[in-house]
Image (cartoon, rainbow, N blue to C red; front, side):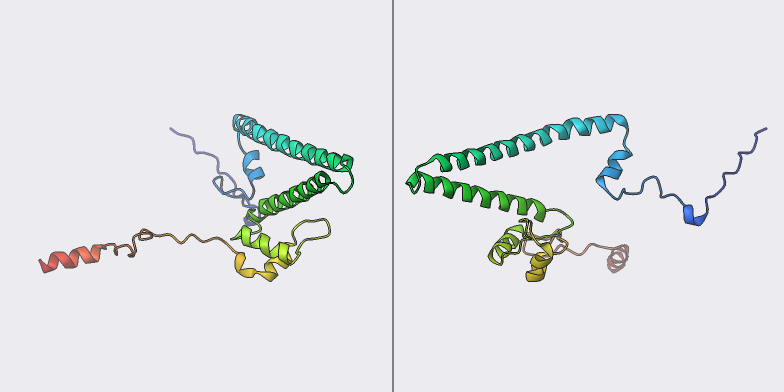
Amino acid sequence: MTTPLPATPEPPASQTPPPADATPATWEAFLEKQPAEVKALYTSHSEGLLNTVKATRDERDSFKKDLAKLAKNAEAGSEAQKQLEAMTAQLEITERRASFLEDAVKPEIECRNPGAAWVIAKAQDLFTKNGQPDWKQIKASAPELFGKVIANANAGNGTGTPPAKPNTMNDFIRNKGRS
């Protein structure tokens, strides 16, 4: 004889928990739900990448300081000083562009063409006082560069012809009736 299982009370509709397989809203939420082993693997993997990024940025900052020091120590008005100042200015432009492109590819920005957005932002000086891109103004200036990226893909892409219409069960029955 089996004993009946106790009934589990249903939570009120307002407190219904999300299904266990629901997609987390953020990466952090997803990672938080993972077992300790997965978290450790992720940390060890990303730690190397983050250290590389930090080292690269430190090298860049050191290079920038060295250029500024050399330009200051160079003879005033000399060709060397002019070249060092030009290199420093070029480095700052490159840093600004890299930062812009890094922001532009973020999903929340939804930039379809970061290169064109950079050209427009630079030409119209669409940056905030602290040098960050003013995304609202950039989007207002060129709305066609923003929005969800939708892949133009189907089985016929690249062949010049659309894919053949798939046969349905009705087509199969009709063809059998004709023969």
